[in-house]
Length: 393
Image (tube, rainbow, N blue to C red):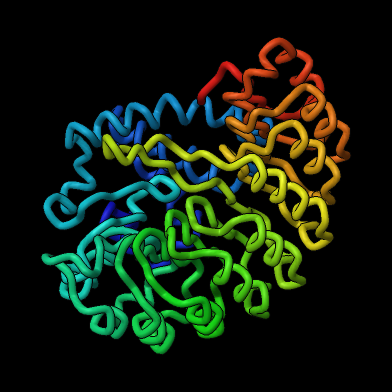
């Protein structure tokens, strides 16, 4: 008969597979106690959600259950009452679930290099976010980290705010341990030139997700150079939110034949700051740029696979919504338009696009011009979960 240790070993040996996790859930149910039953439910529900179409009717129904058990779990986590994660105390900055089990870690590079084997032996870890590599404590030089063989067991890596420049990206690309990398985060304070990222993409044959969010140095020139890169064709998810990329750079990207496989595109603008008082006011887009973004999206025929578009806070206005309605986005299912000053005419134009009937999620929070027609909007997008002007989910 299998025991917990052998079941965990099987999961860690095959971290991308659901079957070993579901076998563990069955074993937990057999224990007959409430904590084990709760954990079994957590694993099964999280695995099912991960395989479903986000915001589909089935996903929404199961997600209601997840809200209940997920909230209970987060409360346990906040109170340090998750015994099967006790071994992580003091060894990571943060951890999160991936399909019901510990799968995402935030930690210092020095610990990863020195103790990497133990992390992967104890949990099916596939995602690692490193605390700033230029930190005064807990860090190692980028070239030391990139030579670490433990990287070969990571599918998703995030170097947010690590100060990586061209030399470091060259070293990352030269690593023999990153050929299986599927997702790369280079957001925040990473200062590389426009030529560095296309060069790196050529060295990462499995990469399908690229996140440069909140990297203010990533600007139009970077986007234009990326648009010329044939390796962009492998990328499915591209997050440019909070970067310095404006409509000109977006137009180059979405107009590129290499963007044809994109499924998710994030274009939320940078935060504005109150310089006098030193705090963020939140993202605020310029109307002219928001309109130009929509015109660029309307002009391209290369986004036939796009299913998720984030234009939150871009300030597209009614005119921008009319332009966006002209876009050829036959696969679009999720549209994020929070705080965009959209008018009634703008939303009616969007509802006339053929994709409106297949939409699963439409975020219109913070569009006060639409407050009086919320019920009508739900009829315009009959299959969608609509967040209207009065909601902030």
